Image 1 (cartoon, each protein chain N blue to C red):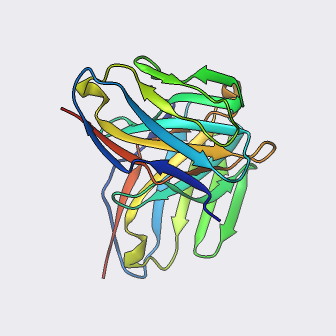
Image 2: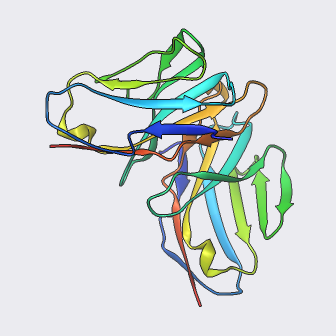
Length: 112
Length: 112
């Protein structure tokens, strides 16, 4: 089992709809979770971080964390063509110190 | 505010040659990381550093060497490049006490 699992996609979403991305992880001791957005040919860009169970909202983005079920999700409301990118889930396993472990990413395509 | 910069952005080298990828950050962040990104494998940690003169192996360190004589620089050296090291390499940095990590723009390395 991979430490961080994501559906590779592509997730096709009509413009204006909600995109829902999921990430599951295996290390129950993981404490901090991140979502990075990566445009094709570019570097990962941090868009959300979440550390406690529940929801965290930032503009059109909402991160959701459920440590008991070991998943973290990202919702993108009012999806725009500019949201078309690969979204990487990352976390710090308990024994890993400051090292980040990444999922393989979910490719999102927002169609006008 | 230059942030974190990598050089070169693109590099083609021959099998067996030594090549060094540079990473420089202006934030005085304590932690620095080198990742490689390959299709099907996502981002994998090669080496990381907690401070000047402190480095440690990540998930895929074989064939790579790092050094960190100054806080702001974290060069990655491929001692004898192999075709399997063809990849996109990302450097990242993180401030001590802060959980978010930030990435440089990447170096696309091709070994022929």
